[in-house]
Image 1 (cartoon, one colour):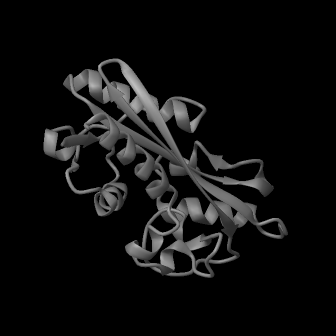
Image 2: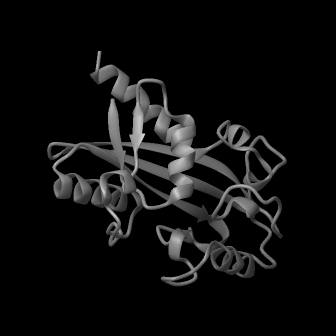
Length: 193
């Protein structure tokens, strides 16, 4: 089964391709000739995930899935949340976003945080959503060089390593994205039986 993943983020594409099950071929936006940006105009992760999937499905008249992910930090009122990708501004780099989090977390004792991913599978005007959450904590400084985004400052519950200190295989043992994708893949298997 071929399915289009509505993301322009090559890091996310690589992660999802690393966890895709046999029989599911993930097709990128580049492979279908889409070069633009997908809309993200809502205030929740669920709505942004749906918006991207619906937009692409209608534009190409195809079945697809999209995801949206946010880092939710208790001590700063759930920030960056839905704004995780552009926390330090519209053209912010991963480093800019991490710097802003570290700055806002200075002196905070409560380091609890979670990553939340919502995948939306969009098919002929109908959709199903799958949520993956990984609890963890925010470090005081960066560790590791792997991964992307907030990976250098997030340690998942059950580990002593930041995501950025892990191989992709190690990260997938904890990954919020893998949790949501596993639910999605299970759904695909059930409907194709």
